[in-house]
Length: 239
Image (cartoon, rainbow, N blue to C red; front, side, top):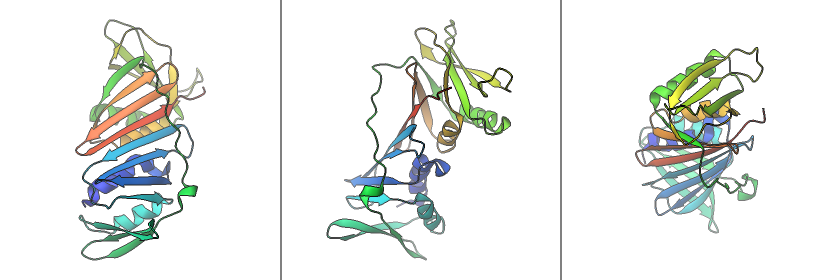
């Protein structure tokens, strides 16, 4: 298996440490991952096709350690599942230099993932590309890891959506910019956690995507690249 593909999948749910423990489900060479962030305010759904791992449920408790093991391997790796009484207990990873073993955990200590109750429709949507991602990450960094940002459909003829990076207080420093999107009517300002979106965008720089936002307080972010599809559901901030 191509190591770069596997690392891309891992990065998309790991989100720089926001999610450590997940279950990988492999069926007919398709890898499916449903993960919840430790903060419980975001869920990740990933599918990756053409994965050369036997059918199994692999419980990854410490993704950081798995990343460390994968980091020393070559570009092409072989993955084999070792089981005891049909229960996977070890993921063996090998390349042309190393034979590595990652011990799998018990399924009972992997956080359960809630079912998302999506709204019948979203209030506005807009495309995400590398230019937008770069702008967002730069804005986040400029305000020294600000905890929140807002999105709002302005309700004008240009169908503009305003993004405001900055704390809720009126005197706080802020960065504003607009994107063209699609909606029927304008909305109120809706706040979301800036750090989670920053990590989502950082993990999907090379993908094309879209953001859907509901005034009920839910954002859906989708990305697709080659054989990987990913969906994030992020709950709004409380302030």
